[in-house]
Each structure stands twice: as C-alpha cells, then as structure tokens.
Image (cartoon, rainbow, N blue to C red; front, side, top):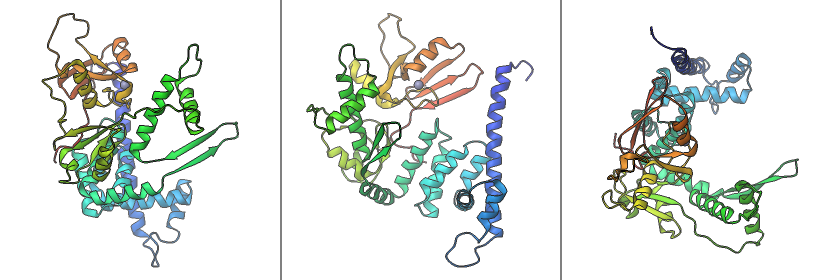
Length: 384
Ligand SMILES: [Zn+2]
C-alpha cells in the first residue's frame, strides 16, 4: 500500500464499505431469525407470535407490516438459503440479490430451492442485478418447469389494461400482456414512431411513440408493420424432447411451453440453439458482414461495459482494429457491442484497458487497476 494514490484508496474503501454492509445485513438476518425463534407462535394458524413484529417495529422505527416481512424473510433465508446467506456475509453478493433469491425460490420445494441457489452462486455474482435475477429464473425453470409454467398461466389470466390518472392533465395507460406481446408491441410502436417523423418535426421519439399509439387505438393509423423480436429456443425443447427454458430478447428466460407457442408465431424471429446454448443457425465460418454482425448482436445481447443494461438494439459494434485500413480476416473476438455512451467513454476517459481473449469474454482494467471480466450471458447455463 506504499505507492497507492488517493483514487485507489477511495475506491478500495468504497468496496470495503459495500462488503461490510453485506456482513452487517447477514448478521441482522441471523439475529432476526433468532429473535423469531425466541417468540414461537402461541396459537395455531399464525406464523409469528402475537406482539413479535410490534417489538421489532418499535425498536427499528418502522411499520408493523415492514417488520413482519423482515422477520419472515430472515427466517426464510436462514432456513432455506444457507449458502446465499454465507455469500452475503462474505461480500460476494448484496442484499438485493438475496431478496431476489427469496422471491424466485418461494414456490419451490426446500430441495429445489437449494439446488437453484447453489447453481446460481457457483456462477458468481454476475455483472448486474438483472443478470443475477435472470440466472435465478432460468435455474428455477429448470428444476421445476411445471411450477414455472403454472405461474405463467396464472399471469396470463391477469392480462389487463388500466388507467392511471394524474392531476396535471396527463395520464397513463398501462397494459399487462404476455412477455412476447409486450416486446412485439413495443417494437411496432418504435418502428412507427421513427417513420412518423416529418420534416421540421420538433417532437421527441418518446412523444411520437405516444402519438402513434393513440392513432392506432383510435383508428387513425391503418399502417401494419411486422414485429421483429427474437426468441431463442433449444432444438430439443422445440421438438418437445424436454422442457428446457428458452430466452426472449430483452426479457430473459421463458418457459418451454411459451417458447413453443412463440416459435409457432410467424411474426417472431426464431433462433435455435443446441443444448449447450450455441446458436445453430449461423455458422461462424460462413459469414457475410451482416451475418457476423447478427451473430455478435446475438452473442452479446447488450453493452459489454460492466453494469450497463443498454440492450443490443441501442448498441453499436465496437472494435479495436477499427481504421487500420489493412484487410484482415475478421474474427468474432475482435468485436463487441457497446452503447454509444460507452463507446465514447472509451475514447475520452484515460486509463481503461480492454482485452478480449475469447469471443464472449471481455476483460476490463479500470484506471484504478480493478480487473473485471464480463462473460456474455449464455442462452443456456453450463451444467453445474
Ligand atoms: Zn453501455
């Protein structure tokens, strides 16, 4: 630590504080569960003893409802997710990831919940919270495909359109639809909004999106466009051999039955993989420029900068060999997806180093010498 600079010390302190927060959160979870154990329910039909949540609420200055949830959650984590609690203690994952694990494993049996937590923890903390959640959902669908399918059917029944009025003269129209339809409808709106732009149009894309939706609903727009969304389906699922989950672009894992339903829908682009998550429909050796671009988009699916959620649709293909002028054999590992902001950041900010030893693995070295490896999310998790 002799020749460290203030920025290195500051970022190390930030990291350490984050790990300490995890340690304290884990300790509090253990103690809340202990407290619940000291106050067993005194009569049948209740989960917590009379007065126990009130004691916690009074101590921590919180509502009784929040206190109840915190005690039940602590008890659940200690009982069902011991490995997740240890990972929180060790600073590998944060409390948000622990809560996501609780929520997603809730419908599963004790044994299945443990299988899900172990499989996901074995893959590390993942680049972002959303990726961690998707990994959990993918594993939960794998260990109990029927539960996931039942849940989806329930959700399907809840589809609806509601209004949210506000007092400032505007309002919201909120539609709950099936995942595939949400993506498709949004893509159509975006497409029409791009086309609706007139010369000297001062409206933003967002405003035009709202305008074309109103026109469509009220019958002022007769134009019909094809939705363009990607569903990735393992071949074995498509032909009904098993119930492996697939993926919907920008949404994440979906159940096997939903894959088959979506794959039958001609408006969607279907990508078929083998059981190890490799795309079957694009050969790496036979690429036209567009084929390679598509393959890179499908491989990365979002900006490769750690923590950036910007999806493939709003990313550019970035390469370090840009502008060399020499005709060279283009390889997948020379390219990666970057959103505009991060492509510019790597041009402007000093001290970042990027290396891409394998097509789907990018190594980032930050100016304070932190090393982060980002592996593109696979369509299929490798077998644990
Ligand atoms: Zn980005």
